[in-house]
Image 1 (cartoon, chains in turn cyan, green):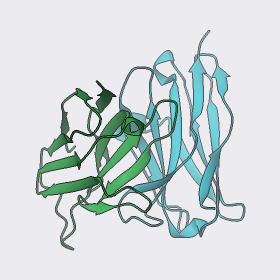
Image 2 (image 1 turned 30 degrees about the horizontal axis):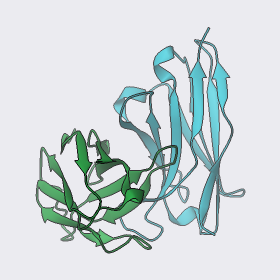
Image 3 (image 1 turned 180 degrees about the vertical axis):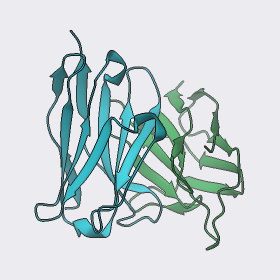
Length: 120
Length: 112
């Protein structure tokens, strides 16, 4: 079965760092980009960035530049997203998704989401 | 950044009736390869989003044929020929032509 499975919920204090993992299975991990998207409570979806697991090329949304790092470990078929200097505005469900495993230019395999709560 | 404008925000529909949702982009989503980089998704309550349509008009694997995508350039439509109760949720589009990828605001489909 083609799937990506994310790590569990996180509760962090303002100023902390969160690292979320995304484990891929059922397809060739290095063949398809992994994207990260977030959804704050009551708000729409927001693109954070992506990584090409084959060569490590990464592109981040300008809003997150300097605070986000996406890495891929092709030996374990896992991608990670790290977000630093957390504020309450970062409280959201974070999704990883694979691009184009069966549908070109689209996110066709989604993780179950990881809830990140930032609270003092 | 490409701005994607989606409408309506809310869509009450009687089961068996058709429904349609619109997305408009601030610039053409047509790439030089001839494909148009706009996709449609449904997020059912409590679930992750699921892909319905990619490259504007190609139905994803396993998606019922009552769902169809159309449009070109900057104007796109997701149509449901006969809404079923299982179709409730939030529908959204994404432009994937260029980074940053940008989303429509979402349309909440509810059953009358």
